Length: 111
Image (cartoon, rainbow, N blue to C red; front, side, top):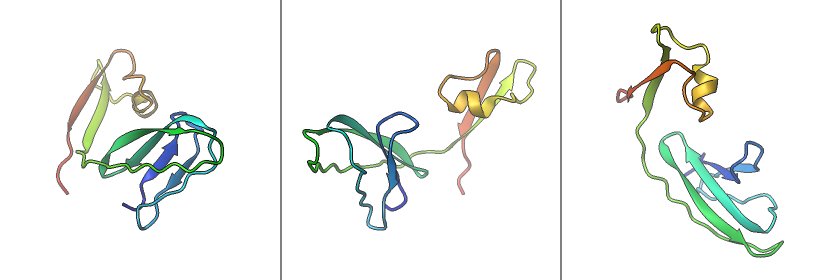
């Protein structure tokens, strides 16, 4: 699958690459040790493979399978039923909705 995002580690500044036309990718040079390989694509559920790089300079291969997902439309509202001005930064970052807000979710309509 082309165009998938492959991130080596879980922090915001972890190195990342994009898969090519043939779905293959090559990482930048990584330290040895245990490294989560996180793969995402807008049309699929994200997946994580844990890879152990045994020593510097060694090549390790891992294949990742992505499963189709369902898109959801999410609106965050305050108790007064007004759209929350922080819905994008607060909820998307994984910290949950802003205090006093409710989250309404539904499946996205098919295209």
